[in-house]
Image 1 (cartoon, one colour):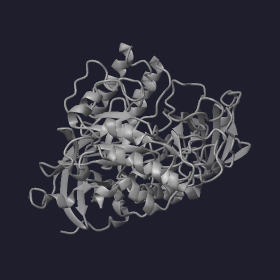
Image 2: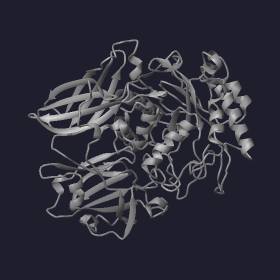
Image 3: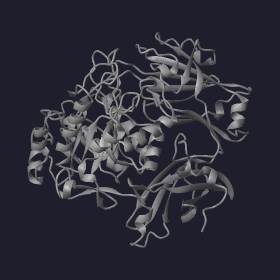
Image 4: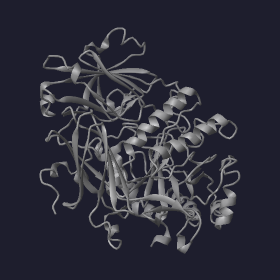
Length: 616
């Protein structure tokens, strides 16, 4: 049975370029990135002086690059807590997106750091707080009776506010230690859609391998009796359909997938790193028999859980060869320089021999997750940290993390969640009951939103309730590393019950080790600069040339790899590791690649070091 005709243009898993919001795609949309008007507002006078009335702004910026970056055309890294943007929407823009009378005009923002207020034609159309998560505004009712409309955005990003989730963005004026230049304002794509009043606003996919089914939660824009039809296909063959009606703003449909009840062949459609099969999907919405909306999506059938000290994907043990990525580019900072750069980042990670990536202290652009889904790269989803513990920091972190998990929980590439890292924002978690309660709440909250993945409560040390026990260890002595990790299971579990290499407790008192998998999730960090480095550049250890770099990386990796499950037939030990780091980033010169993504050694040589002799 062929997948229905007329939808090939919407096949999300067949696109060669990832679109914004890749798991909810319509045939018509318009990116409005490019040249916008721009102004710093250091006196915070813009609102009182009515800058939102559509007046021209004195400078020009290239959206979606932050004004601190060279790619934006501004390249000002100083303290500027308030910035303004202006963009005209012409009749040609609205025509291109197919907007007609009776439809709703939507403006999508991929991410605006940190607090945004938006006007259209002088009217406030919405606000959003959270620098890493998307939001969408229906601006229809603000459209003036004019041929050209003016979209204005005010973004506020207080560099001194350490109760704001900021990840690796520095609160000091210049980058220091492990922190980098700030990313203010718009830093992910902005685009338009025109939709009918009843339309899809959200999709969540969940697979049940044991029963051969897929469940989709469909969120709708308004309460009106609607019919929802869902089609799932693979290789132009329909494998499942479902239909439901609802008078509410959401509906849940479960599809039985053809062939998945055959236990001998059901694995053919499963997503796994070596065979990242994706299924195409379409969701149709009708009212009174007339189609109101059709969106394309995709999904991957896979499960992730833990058992007997192992991480299991689709019920089989898997060992992670992961790398830490800061997701930072010298010319564009946290924003990717292009959509192709996101694809290349995923490809390079795999070419180096890694099967997973931990995007550190950043909720990554979901176009990167699209390529991870397509190419078979496993991903850890991580929340950017605050650096204080207050009522406000708790509220902000919780709200933004919920948005992040909701946005990304349908990506098959994401295999675990990391709401906290190294006690950042909960610096006294071992002594303060309120900070520990917050960490426990974040763990449970994440499980409530998405019970299908493991959650690491506080990656690195001082872990409370957690589905994985994870350690950070930057010792460069391979003999020390071997003594710590190339040991039997009983010794390893005694080790995680005590003080870790950073001088912190690995597991907090009162936790119970129920045989959760153990991983070394930060180590390595060997510095070797092949180009001119900042005066304050550093690494956790330092090589003096190519040969020494290869030797140091190889011996550290060999020492850790010897303690992992599956290494030369080993049945116990760690379930994986995460090398620091993928690229040089400003003063951190401990990447396997330069900041411009050039390998410091030939790719084949680096791959041999990372994969090790046990895989050949």
